[in-house]
Image (cartoon, rainbow, N blue to C red; front, side, top):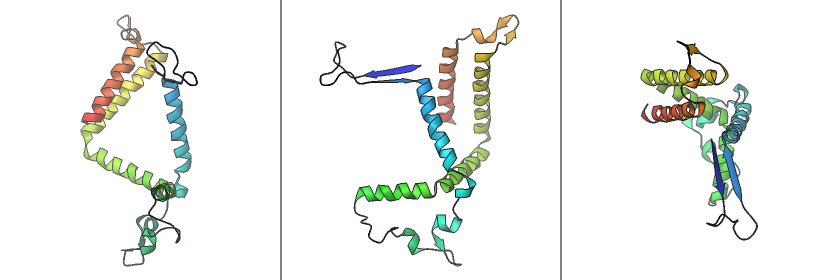
Length: 172
């Protein structure tokens, strides 16, 4: 599966001023991009970088009150009026508490999954179909003299499984 995007005129000639700009996206490029992003996040999210709960929630003291220092600017001379500095502060906060945010996402996902067993069964079936698809790409299964992998082409199976995945994600 590939997608090509090119900038040019209707006749197919490159656009004026510098030649043709084209972007070619294929499945391997997309997989390598997301694989690199996931490995970078995995290297940053560790148990060693989980911040204490009182720091994450901004709580101080024994009475469990919100600390005014937690919600103040990190630097006293920070001009909070500019959007760039606000975005910078959000980025710093996200980077500092990344492991805590990941832990919250995993916890909420587990609670939601356990509260909806139908979703778990759907995801398990979906995982099984994708695993069978991956197995059939490299191996053969013959049932009643017919190769299961040749009944539907790999491309058609991929498209069908992608459609089923979208349906499960949207409706479950």
